[in-house]
Amino acid sequence: MSLIDGQAGESRREIAPGYLEVIGLALLITVGALFLYDRFLVPRVVAFDLQGYLQRQKTLVTTGAITEEQWQKGLDHLEQVFRDQPKRHTIIVNDVVLRHGNDAELDIR
View (cartoon, rainbow, N blue to C red):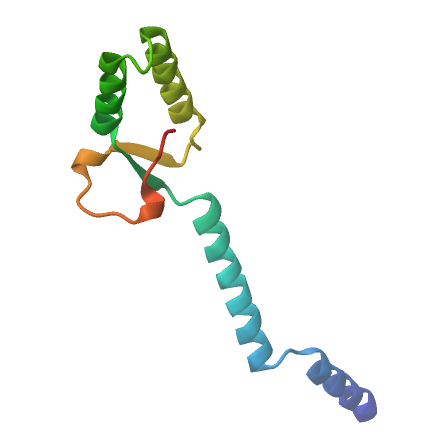
């Protein structure tokens, strides 16, 4: 009987992971969860210079560079770009932003 118990004890030790393996697995799961959360779930704030865009369009219309029909198409394009943004993106007017990185600005061309 003691021989069987001895073998069972030895096999349990071989199957059980060590502390470093447990820590490594927990670290891997945590890093993976944080990456997926940041990539797919975190809301993003995107700034847009609406006043500057409208000023440029107005200048182009007054100088005759574009027609009013092209201006209207530009506004429709702007609306489509806003609608095409992912649901987790929040678009705010650039006037209320104090500081932001270059990647947080929506550029319409």
